Image (cartoon, helix red, strand yellow):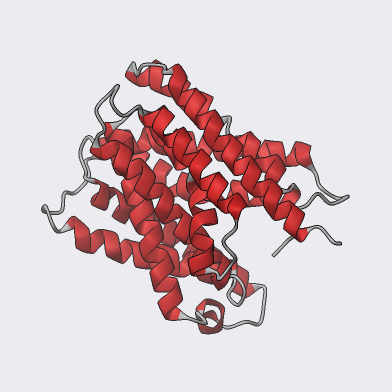
Amino acid sequence: MKSEQATPDAKPALAALWMCGAIASFTAMAIAGRAIQQELDSFELMFWRSLIGFGIVLSIVLITLRKTDQGFAKAIKPTSPVLHLTRNLFHFAGQNLWFYGIMVIPLSQLVALEFTMPIWVALLAPLVLGERFTMRRLFVALLGFAGILIVAQPGVQPLTSGHLAGMLCAIGFAMNMMLTKRIMRTDSVICVLFWMTLSQTFFGFILAQWGGFTWPSPAIWGWLVVVGLTGLSAHYALSSALGLAPASTVAPMEFLRLPVIAFVGVWLYAEPLEPLVFAGAAVILLANWVNLRGREMRQRPT
């Protein structure tokens, strides 16, 4: 894994361009997700999203292998199938909860709650990765929880299943990130993406049978393609940004996703613009910054 501290070859300007691509992708995915769920449930959406993603990944694998001597089976062979399965279950659950959340609470609230993902990583890393639990991690968790309370405003407005979905999707994404970190010690990105899209196509198809599988109408086929493409492009752009600049530089850039998605919510869906959502998100961002600074200090050579 690359060090998180700044390096002489860091390129923050180029990283910012990649982050613009990531923000645009996440925003387009939210808009497409809402349009699709006028007809399909979230399980059906995840099936088509993963199927399109699998087709793209499979094409990339086959094209890549033509340029190398590596066999197909060797390229996609996982070192630990159980670890891949566990990782994909958490990612599937988190993504499914995210798509559910965009339908039941304002987009800005969901994104603000999603920003707690690094805080859950700090809390769960001692259990999943064997890292040491410190007072800094406890402070980060308490600060992040304060931000959640400001965003959700319990007692002022009713807490809904959407708020719970927002917090649970952040936990799912946190587990996905930590398990991916373990997998990437031995397996390639192509291997990870291949099994992720294949397994989640299977998960989505099985769960979609629960309420009766609905075939999408021609009106939403374009939106399904958008979801399939942006699901891959968002994470590719974010990973590219992190490869060009340290996380402490990239994380504040991602905060720009909140005003963008809030504007989209006001413009397209007449959602209210809540100042407390931005205040709570700022507290969550502060908690993430404290967490990143602690990580940089641990990695700094003595």
